[in-house]
Length: 163
Length: 260
Image 1 (cartoon, each protein chain N blue to C red):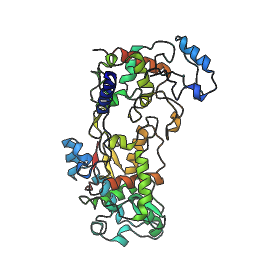
Image 2 (tube, rainbow over the protein chains, first blue to last red):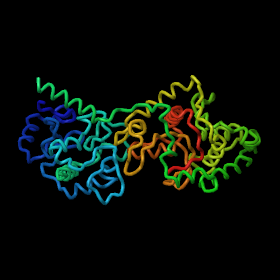
Image 3 (cartoon, chains in turn brown, red):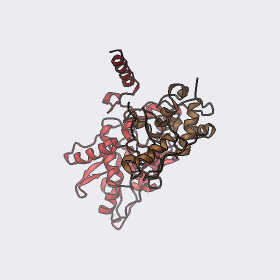
Image 4 (spheres, each protein chain N blue to C red):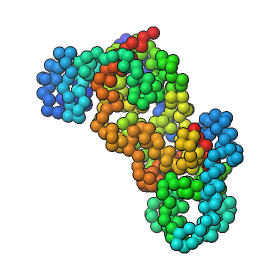
């Protein structure tokens, strides 16, 4: 699959020069520029987002706290995983145990950012997306489920889930 | 060639891994939320003496005979014995109201009676008296099948209800159908996803610690997917109620049910 620009990337959406965006990808340490909707731009390459949204690696400990929190990450509402402290079972989505073996960091990042990229019918919400939604409760309009730093923390944690 | 075969195999695996969209539930597969409850909760629903909603039904029974409004008229003054006159009535709601040219649910019907015949003010949405009257009237249909009217005037409203049911909404971006048609029976944080049939309303919900209407429950679902709830009595709520009732047509009324 050729390098694809996300339909939600700034190249199509804002006047941000493509050259500047490309430069930001090349200098992987730097985050891509903010888009018109306030989100950090990202680039999808081979069904993955290889570069960190913040330009920095996330914190796996913070990521675990987000994943296991029913109000913030919401992940455990549908997924089970290595969360012995949670006394309930969820099976609306695959068990997260070993997900770090099954997916690369970039694939994990794309799944969290916008799972609908791989499967438009998925019930998994797009955690880093504010467009194309209907009747979002007013206080949350324009806000993604997680911010870029939280996304990186979650990705850092999911990477550690190896069997 | 090998590569092509591998791609085909991968596509097949993907197709198998993606849960099939179940679509609408076949009539013989429909299940009341009652069937997924604990034995304790089922017992609570079945025994009037321990069903907390009985308190609302008894309040409703008293209100049925209480005179109200400038007309100084009670429900019983026109309708007589509810056990006779109200039997099967709520099982047919929402129904088309000629004057409003739209479907009304049973709580709206109660309020229309108040304004049109009792010259009384409408009871506020989810108020104790309105829910009590509705629970009492609904109790008279317990055990009867849901029978939404076969009224051609309801068709556009049914279509609207179905569109809302399948519309992805909210920050979580889920439709009613994605949970209640496609994923019922699975575990959401330890709770079994029900099929979402409205055969027990008004009902006592342990989470609420009170009796509430179907609109209140729909509001909870919308809040859960972080969507903006409709205002009480909004036409879209009634359209959704209508669709849900038709989807459950033939299922037996459990009002007042108990749910977790």
